[in-house]
Image (cartoon, rainbow, N blue to C red; front, top):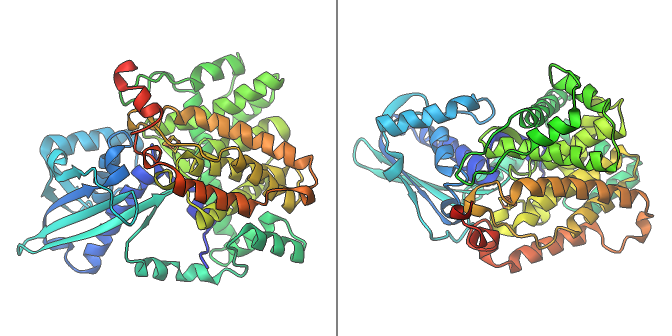
Length: 474
Ligand code: SF4
């Protein structure tokens, strides 16, 4: 049984895409680890990289080439100084040299040594192959697949199974929502209690708290940065950042000096229904504008959908509960992570496999369930809220204009966040015993819909808005 930690669902990374940026970045690092394991790293003379399928079709807009290069240079997406990325890439382009794993220089021309192939690999739409020529002339290669949310696998699943072994030790293995509910009922516990018990089998309470704090810090900073940065997003679409203007009108003349004071300042603003809608949208837009400009965000469960969960947590903190503290944030993330993992196990969180329902739909379901528990909902209502949120994202296609994670992606986060709040409220007002659609059924339906969806709507930019609106129209 596949057991996934909440920290696999909520990963700190760099935008704009978890499958097309974070995944290829991590694949580059994993290839280097393989070369070292095989004792050939020091013998590498030249390298080339083949990108396939969706990674090729939307790779430029999603910065896949940049991500691969940064991975091969040994940078960690969690810690890299994002403001240095442009100069690192410029330097490689100018000198035609790459500092391989921060260890030795090899000649490298990104324009000719990263090859964009339109064909799809059979195993997964997001395939990539790294090739090396060794000093003795021998050629070796290794393929990886970015399966969504920054997860990377080999076609040969043996390595993955080995990696997963320690996760088999979860005291309460959960494959489906019904398993989760059974544990909650038999132990008379909340969803977050069950998830915490499982997480404790992997790491100490201190470590769990530390990692949740880091995740929240990045979420809060991405909202803060997005709300305080004006201008136009990179990529050529000329998309104006909107969080800045909306935020300016909402916050007025209130003074603050840092993200913590900012939360207090927002709590002091007047909020009626329209302001609530605007605040939630503003938080979501802010994160995804940061994401679109290669900034640091939390993959939740993907980068394209990174704004939904922070926006809903902030909604709870600044609108619903002014006394909210770390314990609430922790509870929220435990539930959200678990709901996301149910979708990963039963369907997909990859837009290249399932369209945008797999990104915005899943993030909305994660946020809806988590908010419901914080608002006092039962475990049944938590699952019901997640189900409602996904039910109304079924069939949502992925069609980013010019392959950039900007239109429709950024606005979609605002929509996903608002839907999550609405789904929560509906679930709280419903006797979950009367639910017609269990969460597991909607997960199955999402997967069936994903399989039936035309390939052009799965992160290829060959259908939908991506072909109706071209870069020259913008
Ligand atoms: S349309 Fe949705 S799934 Fe596709 S890139 Fe944008 S946010 Fe991601």
